[in-house]
Length: 292
Image (cartoon, rainbow, N blue to C red; front, side, top):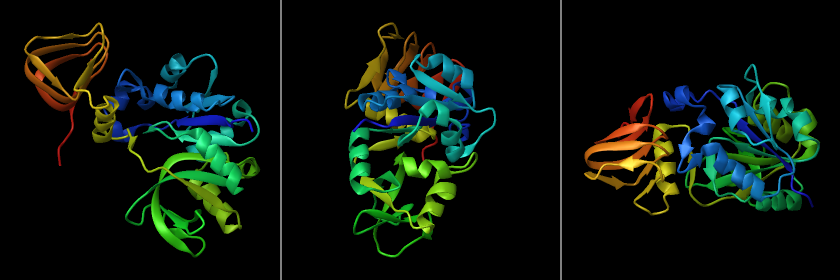
């Protein structure tokens, strides 16, 4: 069976990531050698999605300029919510099932495995979840079906909790119920479950990152290094007296000073000065993560 079309949700304001999201659209903040959105597109493309659409609101023209010609942009003049984002892009997505991926979530989820699980389960939608020791925001029964979302238990039988990762496949028969404005969980999934529809869950028990906060954004960059001590773009310059530890230095960046640069991300074209730790350095300024 053909892979579903893909919708990457990137219309949020990125308030938790400010001031970085004031300087760049959140989907375009660099993770390693590419913007975060490029990593999501790579996962979606590898699964063979026939159509890919990205929605945007904040700094939408920056997102448009980044996208390759075969990826459609759904520009939201007003924020429509996750459900409204999918509904508004219906013409660009086309008919059938749709893979939905929050643009600030980085995970090595295989969309082909999600599509196979969705087809096999016969559910209205299938959510990628990460098992957790506590309650989580999703409750799963013994058959692998979602019986609770957020704090609402729709049917009995929960045997374990999990965290919804913001990656899911919506079945074609559920799409007509998606409103022009609203939230996919609160305004689509919960009403569908109350009406008798079932939602499936696909476990993903591996690292993932929500780059919506400074701490998780830094963690995603360190993880991208894959155990290497640092990555320096070919045309970046690092002074001899600087030692790099778990840091990423982007294209055209300059690192000056003496001492260590630890757990830092230096954006392309920015200038950083060592010693410095747990920070993002942009042309516009330096943002240091607060250690708690």
